[in-house]
Image (cartoon, rainbow, N blue to C red; front, side, top):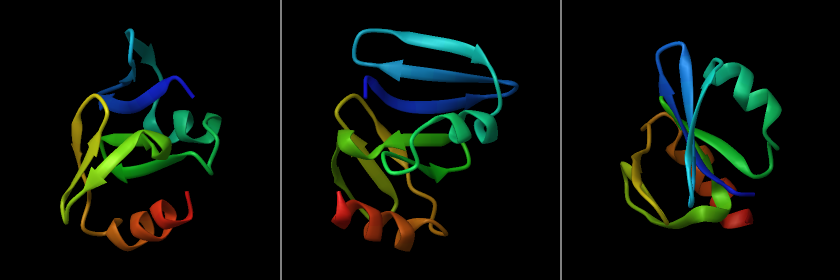
Length: 86
């Protein structure tokens, strides 16, 4: 619940919270399996977001409490259906 979003950094991922940032040697695919599927969504090849931290969104961008991240056009429909259910 403290994680705002996860960002890919090559072989590492950066976990961003409101207080700190953590860099971990792990793939995006692996970290996605460890996070609760009902709360976290992979909105772009380089970003996984916490759906509870979404403030608003546009056609190609999601605005979180700490940052704006891109929204893949291929994941827009799934994102909209998830955000309406949260």
